[in-house]
Image 1 (cartoon, rainbow, N blue to C red):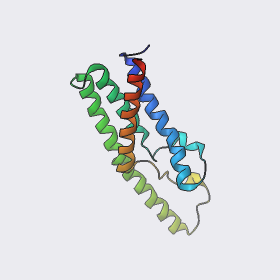
Image 2 (cartoon, helix red, strand yellow; image 1 turned 120 degrees about the vertical axis):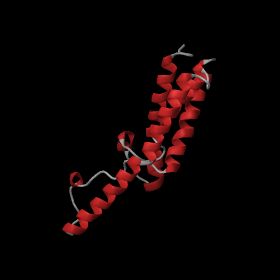
Image 3 (cartoon, one colour; image 1 turned 135 degrees about the horizontal axis):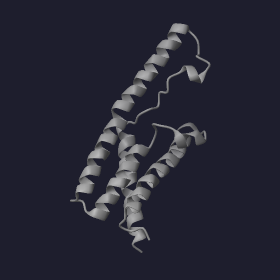
Length: 150
């Protein structure tokens, strides 16, 4: 049993990331009707695995050490920075990459046949993707914590 140890928090955070990445395959399929296993290692998309991971970790720490503990406070700050970055800076970088790719395409009047010539555009998340990751992470941590108590 790993109840109330650091292992519970680590497993919770890793499960949050893994489950979110797996769900990206499903949400990508619902959008495009194509199965893309490469989504397991992709950035961006629904839900945010960054948010799911840090929120699962933070929720686990709250359940283990208490929501008034220093561990929870520290992890909450870390989670807020990660989620802000996912929806802010990384999203903006993806938007800039999209514009640069379009400028290159317009300048060379070609389709840029090689993928390596293009900048990666799907880097960040929409606020909806971050919020979905937040709730997914919290739910995973609660389920893991209470299933270990049995």
